[in-house]
Length: 67
Image (cartoon, rainbow, N blue to C red; front, side, top):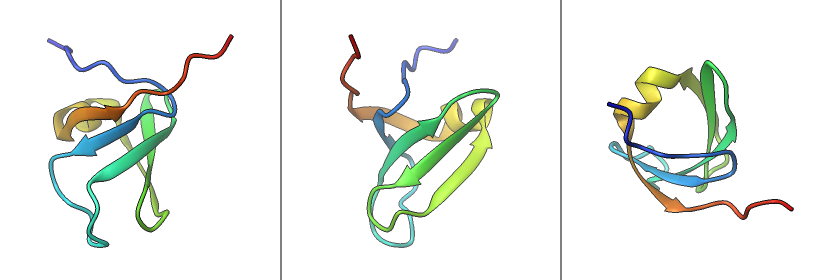
């Protein structure tokens, strides 16, 4: 069911555009809730994980693996 793979510091595209005009968001916190930060204006939003997976379209930029 959950075929969308995302990780910390990935840049993702959401289905709806942010009012500032961009569609790109960076994942800055993961857990039961996901905190994402707008790449255009810097506004951050925390939403429940299941709601995030429904609203996410795809991963634009995969974060670099540490180590």
